[in-house]
Length: 163
Image 1 (tube, helix red, strand yellow):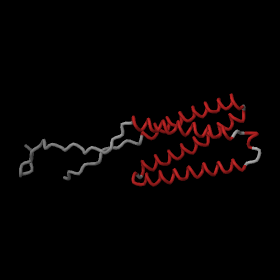
Image 2 (image 1 turned 120 degrees about the vertical axis):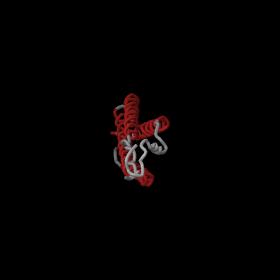
Image 3 (image 1 turned 180 degrees about the horizontal axis):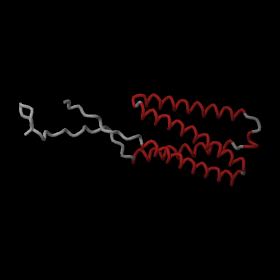
Image 4 (image 1 turned 180 degrees about the vertical axis):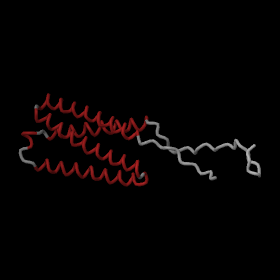
């Protein structure tokens, strides 16, 4: 008979799903608020600019967070590398989008670039604040505690019978 024990069952990563949901909700609310403000102050071009900026930022941040959370659950040792690569890819994608929008002709007639920036900034700030608040309040253990040692409740005699 061996004394090896199986490791305790670890539950799936519920913290990442909760953080993603809260951040998406907060980003959506701030994006909608920016769009309403853009509509009130600059008309439909302001609202469309804020909605496009908020939507693109929310899509990029949510997919990046989901990828990093998935990798952290499957291969924790690779999660830092994937997080850095994902962040670099996110910045590259947003920079390419800004260059493409900057080269577009007649953009101001349909979408307001300043309100696009307001939508991006509003979602990015809401996203960051929500993740920081969630990370400081989540009770995530730093390490797994060792399993309690089994006490010898039965004494075995040299003949192999129990007392």
